[in-house]
Image 1 (tube, rainbow, N blue to C red):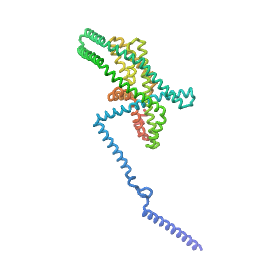
Image 2 (cartoon, rainbow, N blue to C red; image 1 turned 30 degrees about the vertical axis):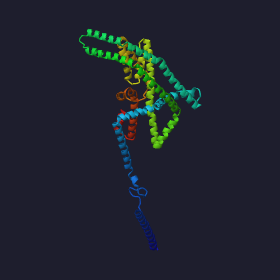
Image 3 (tube, rainbow, N blue to C red; image 1 turned 90 degrees about the horizontal axis):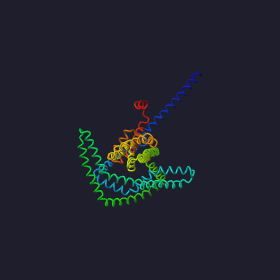
Image 4 (cartoon, one colour; image 1 turned 90 degrees about the vertical axis):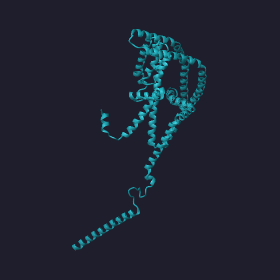
Length: 439
């Protein structure tokens, strides 16, 4: 009986082993069948062979970029080899587009003023209602302020500047005699000093200066005619520019929306967000510096004019305008603006030159320590060495305009480079950088 039960169990175990063997055999057959039918292999996706375009997608991207670089290099070569014609074409293009450029610049600088006036109107008058009405009123008030400022300049500032220039022109012979007399006295007091070079330069410059003034008076009629034609053209372009700027200010949200549509149509949402954020920050850096520096220079020019009138220094309006304009140049601007005044006063009375130099020094300290930080703050974020670099390179290549605009342009470039470096370093733990940041 026991032997029969044991044999029965052994039989069941044999049956189970046979079934397991059959299953494993079926599995092997299925695997072989799949292998024969073309199961997914390395280099294939989902059992389907990858198309050759997908395989060579990387090479296609390289080809596209290479083609772009080659075409760009050819265009640059053509532009450089035909620079005269290119420069003339660019000049003609700017001449045609000058009303639009004037409108864009006016809109760019007036948008913050319009936004400020609109905010005040909505806060104190409309209580947040009638947005379109307040925008129209704000645009009108902003242009009224600008027109009033220009009218004051034409009525008071420009006539005073013309009078000062006329007085200086009439006093050139007197200044020449004064300088020669001072040099002669200096030669008597210090006979060891050789002043022949200074005498020769003055004797050479003075006749040329007189001849230049005579020629200028002789050719005054053609100059006035050409100037009148230029003023008429400028007035037409300015009128068109004002109309364009009003439309751009009123429709700035629509322009912003259209720009975002283009960005998000070309790039993915993530890249589009990054591009919009970067452009917004660049606009803040560039616009904040120019607008704040312009306000700062206007205040410095007004303070300089008031101080010179209180002290009793002549040519106050002319020299204050020069000081205010050159103050747009960081660091060097006030000293550059002080040079003409010091030279003019040295030719008449050295005490006036000393008083003017001390006044400019005090004004510069007030601007650098009190007024400038309140208006500008850290609008550029550049170190002094990069500010000097921007002024030097901008002035060398683009003159006075380059000295004005060089600093915000370099600030924008520095921001973009810093953003690129930060994105590349994100996720990397560089010990040398961590030690430097900790210290």
